Length: 212
Image (cartoon, rainbow, N blue to C red; front, side):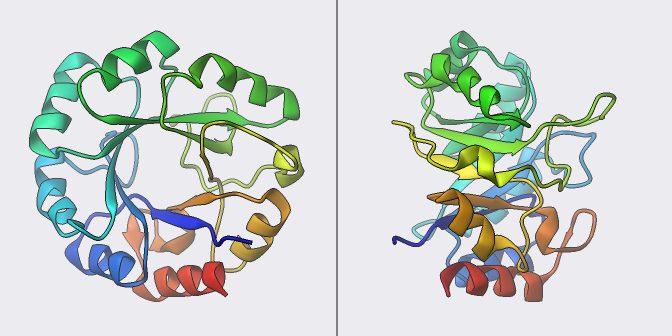
């Protein structure tokens, strides 16, 4: 079986960006959302993203961005992809994609029926991403480090490639891929020593466990 590719997300410093790249991450992500402990301004993320040139694709994670924020992210950071983590409609995704940037659309799921919500997006996004559905009252729509029932994705077929996200870490990633068959995985809090602070050793352990 082909090994899954990884996105290391929520990066904010040169050391751990370099570690993620050295370990073979296919995507590196930067979160621009003030309510997140991983928030980074596009101008600060720009030099970090440049480190990935020729090695990995860059992703800017945003939540229901208005046009002003989109202009800033695209101009200052110039990501390969925008990861839309809010309630963006298919029409909004298409309008953003028309700006010349790829689209990863994130979905919170808790039951098999939740996968149906992806269907209107299949013609307009480049990737899907499945995360645990945020509980009521949460201040963030995703990126909460929670695992959902992986059996929901068993046998899932999609014409659009997809990421598995939600509570992944070096200890569970091998089993997560085995159960779901995920072609792509996304990790953030699972490779941190504290919220927003990536840990070089855990990044290496995650990538090793993924590739073993």
